[in-house]
Picture 1 (cartoon, one colour):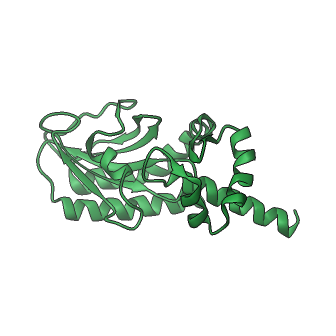
Picture 2 (cartoon, rainbow, N blue to C red):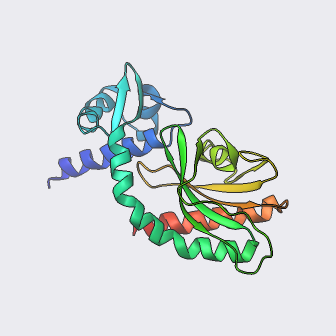
Length: 210
């Protein structure tokens, strides 16, 4: 691979990551150019192969992730689950609450891995494969956090009454919107739990990049 081809690949991957990290459902070409550090014309050129492969969808000047990313995500799920299991087990037993890894798929959040605490009398039974709207709960809030803002989010009574949740996004994995979270029947020390989730999410992202 030539140096020029390597730079193009790197910019294409950076562009895909920028689309994935966009705060709304889509990003503008102007915003993407600023994030990637290139011109709008270059962004349009980089979008061509990504669009052809279904990794992004462009409508005018707005860009969002395409269905091709979901296919890649499905192929990555086994690795994601395996990498997350140790962290989930540690979080569940340390916090005394059910820990989970959830992945955003379109407008839904999909629970792909769960660990229940081993030393509690009562805890939330969170079914593997559960889904809820991406706008709901601590996970929904965590996935909408600004990259440089607070690294965790909390919710009470959402998406289910009587449930307390805290979640942190797993950042830096191109094309994957995921979050580590815990759900409890009792209120949690959100700041302490949030910090633990941020650390675990960072370690998980690092493990997936290795």
